[in-house]
Image (cartoon, rainbow, N blue to C red; front, side):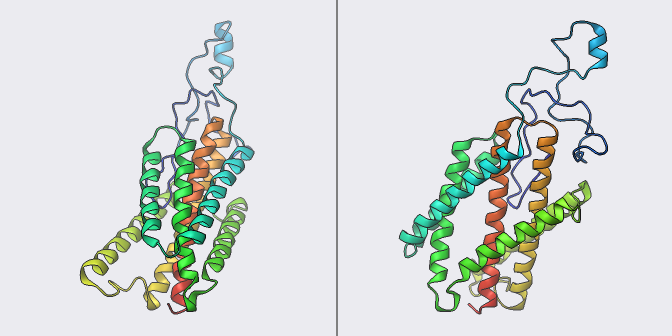
Length: 287
């Protein structure tokens, strides 16, 4: 399955790993089938270990696995490591860089570059992902500390953290109970909506930079509140895409190292939600 989140560049699990899996989607009653592919992307043709022609026709052709399949424990562990690195970086940014936002913004830009590099790599790189998490954490920590020091916004970062956690739990429950179902149509809708959101944000930024003032008004007032709510909702919908990617990867026997890709995507989506939540709270509190 190919999945994406708000940066529009993270690719789904790689399909050239050589790991043997099923040659057909899971049957009814089994793991959720992938609506985007009729066959298992991890399956390989030909069975070099077949003893006779009958065994070839009766059993799904497979190669010997290069690594054991990814499990939910792998995804949870890698996601915990990645988010833990974000928190560590945020602690450094909060304690030491609140009054030096220039360095923190530089860290954020480098983190963006690393995220794009990982997005175009064929396989996940744990070192690259953790470096992204550390630098992104430094940026978030410094920005959050700066906002927290403003008189009207004291405590806003903690509210944003709690709001992000609430969105994650709510979407996880909605996904597991099938209130939210990830289909091809759902994915297209989310992608189109998110591209429109980012395009409007870029246009607003250009107006702010070259025209001064509040740009198109997406960062303050009633329109800013609506725009912030849309941003949070889009982040929540991208969480559903991430959950589907993890579910399909496990069902189709993705190799263990692909759990880093799942952790990478979940981290970027949670960062997106936190940033939109922090901006929305800032507008609601009048600063």
